Image (cartoon, rainbow, N blue to C red; front, side, top):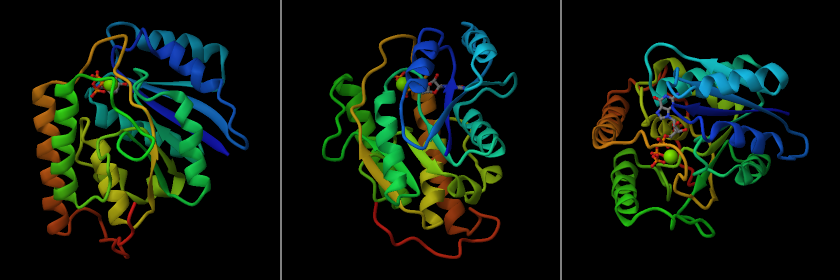
Length: 254
Ligand SMILES: Nc1nc2c(ncn2[C@@H]2O[C@H](COP(=O)(O)OP(=O)(O)OP(=O)(O)O)[C@@H](O)[C@H]2O)c(=O)[nH]1
Ligand SMILES: [Mg+2]
């Protein structure tokens, strides 16, 4: 099964090579792992590192974006690339080792066991988020409550962008209609997947704070995420989330 791991990057020169190598070293029976780095022309040279790796390894790919920088836009373009490349499974994760490659097999196993979307979760049994400062943990919790209530998502961790998808999910959620340009893509994919009635399963992960490189998250970005989540709800109420409204409303619990 062709499995493309989409890794959006901005200034991850210290992380991108070890992460890519760790992903390619995974042994997942019946899965052929490819890594696609979607870089927004990082000034620290992240994309040059990946370009070099791709020259000698056909399982490493670079999508080098030079306009409209954004975590969400990069994610959408990465998903489209993966679909075009014929991926059966698509994984999405951060580059900074907060999402450790060792959990990828668990996510893929959850798909094999019947889920359409498998999401790495800090807050289910066996998961953890103990490495980050108290203030970041509180922000995550508060944002999580807002997101879960507004979007009616029965998930314990609605902000984890560490996921695996079956191909048909990404084909169905209308990537061209996405409104997220930034990190809210994480919630938008969840929301659209649920509206389409797909089975979402949370899989425990231990979330680690980034050790190398700098964060891109700031207060402005956080408020933008909360605003986009609100907009998604409005679109749903107006029946404008999808071109044609979903044929089956979800009643499944994650
Ligand atoms: N392509 C692209 N990737 C981005 C952009 N902003 C962030 N990323 C990547 O998205 C992932 C998540 O960003 P982070 O900066 O780790 O955000 P965070 O996890 O909320 O915060 P920290 O872990 O504390 O830094 C990382 O792999 C980033 O390199 C962007 O504008 N474009
Ligand atoms: Mg991070």
